[in-house]
Length: 71
Image (cartoon, rainbow, N blue to C red; front, top):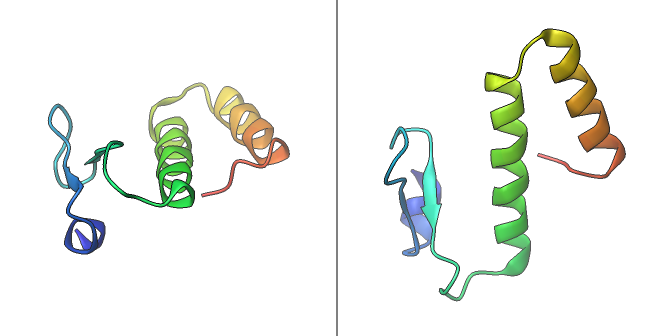
């Protein structure tokens, strides 16, 4: 909700839980750092919440960390 208040191009996600997911319009004037942060956050959050077994989840998160993907 804070991002939606700060950026007019960040809106509730259309096909997802609107409480937890945002749409980010890429044609807007958003800083590229912000867009990269949002992509990384979505990627990591998806792994944390949807990947099983636990060993695969841990492996993917470790790989993301070693590649420099930070939340």
